[in-house]
Image (tube, rainbow, N blue to C red; front, side):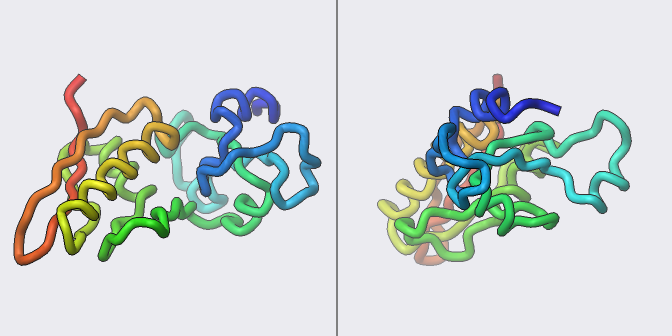
Amino acid sequence: MSSLNEVGEQDGWRCWLCDEPVDAEMSVNDPRGPSIDSLSTKSRGKSKGKGDSTGFGEERLAHRACNTKKGAIAPVVEWSRELFIVDPAPIVAVVERLQRKGGREIIGRCPTEDDADAAADWFVDRLSRLVPELVVETSVETGGGQWMVAVITARR
């Protein structure tokens, strides 16, 4: 188990769920205060073998309220409300699949190329903080009167 300061430093004092800053000096009892989120749920912990992990690391920094809201269920990392994206893929599930299998996935559809470019840029930026070790590229492709955003695991 890591200390709050170690986890906070590892995550740059940003909540891994909402991507907002976490104040290290705030009370741990305050909803916006720091807390450590253990990424495996009870059922997941029982089903996984020793040494296995989600790929995100075992512990991440979260606001107390974000951690409480998540509870003991699979985490949900929200897409930005500023993006115009239709049928956005669940970010955590996409990351887990890319880490496990690699490859390419469509992560959403957009009505314009500018919207798709903005979604692609946001996704890469968000992943750079969520899972810095995962290197991805995006592509924006037209099809069926819309623009599809794809993410591809990058070659190292």
